[in-house]
Amino acid sequence: MTPGPIWLLASAVLHAGWNALLKREREPELAALGVLAGGLLFATAIAIAWPGAGFPTRAALLWGLGAGAFEAVYFVTLGSALARASYGAVYAIARGGALVVVWPVAVAFLREPVSATGAAGAALVGAGVILVAAAGKERASAGGIALAVACAGTIAGYHVCYDLALAAGAGTAPLFALAFAVALPPAWLWARLTGRTMVAVDRGAVLRWTAAGSLVAASFLLFLLGLARSGAGVALTLRNTSVVFAQVLALAIGERVPPRQLIGSVLVVLGAALVAAG
Image (cartoon, rainbow, N blue to C red; front, side, top):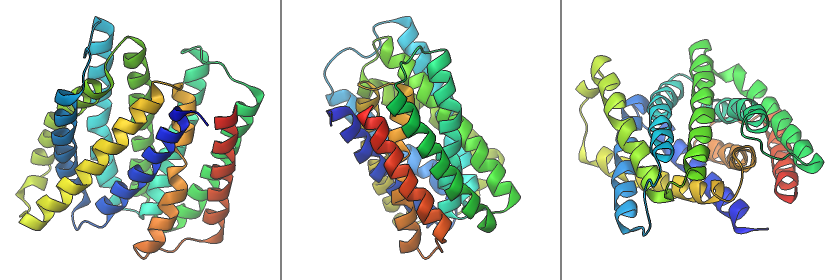
């Protein structure tokens, strides 16, 4: 296996981890904002230390700004969905929905090649995620499901923007830092308008959010490194193996994981293996 898929799989583990930490917070919507701020802190430090050009072309900069806009809505919808539905259900619906959107876009508009093995793997991943999501619907409110679906759209959006920014020459770490810098102000404005910032925050919460932010930074950096060596469709498919890790973490935080959810997770693993092979 080449470094790209390995980085994407490592990113998937870390991604599932910080989402689980966010679910355990008493106020996931406010915590999402804190995690975004923590991620920006680490992303900026990495970008400063990372050698190379940031945005050598205008297209790279514009797509980076677009990724940041999607990231803002992602963190808002993710926190809101986790406040209203189980972690396992939200995670599966969001990641699976994004896959459904990105693969057709990648093939039709980004001209990514599709092998028979890769297509079969993507279909298997999609079937597995749908099965997991169907099992999770029983433990999610209608509002939580709707927010998870909206979150899926933002995931698809920032994947495509990141892919196009990298293709236009953007540096990996500077792109990540720019996107988070763009995302934080509107996410903070949303929190103020909805009264989320009025909740008291203690030192322990700040430390937890900062730790989760470090996982965000590591996860996204590994994701962008993998994306730079893979197409958006392949990258998102392999990133969706985090659905499997999420089910394990769901059990760890006390959620019930029904048999259909476990079977779907196995399908995701098998499909991801086919995508990597293709």
